[in-house]
Image 1 (spheres, helix red, strand yellow):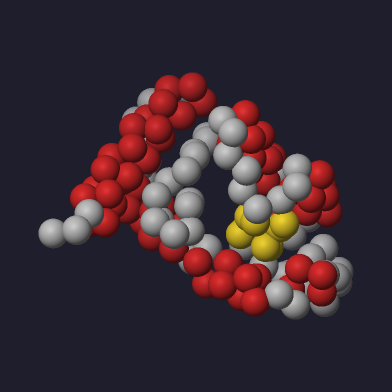
Image 2: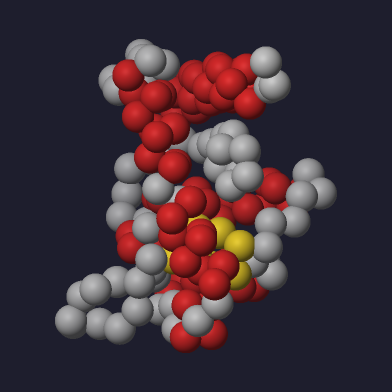
Length: 144
């Protein structure tokens, strides 16, 4: 999601595995860079507070604004270099708007249960649903 407008910037469908979410996020970062877009920060929930993901975003020149894990068994991978800035708090508030997109895709876009078999077909359907969301969002963003 692009923070200023709330539009879907990219979407991917990954095979369900333990690291699928953050591997997909790194792939989407690579695609954005190939398009010539250079995101400076990436907001994510605590499920992305993994050393490989945090290091992967930093290698790509992107600051990981990942929610810190509140687990007593291990420390968060995001340290004070990131969390002390005001932009981190703003990013944590804005990342919750991504859940609105998922909610819309499930209720209005019919993405609660996939209609197709296979990653390629389901991914194509995800692109269509995200495009429909962006069109409805753009209509609301335009001046009356």
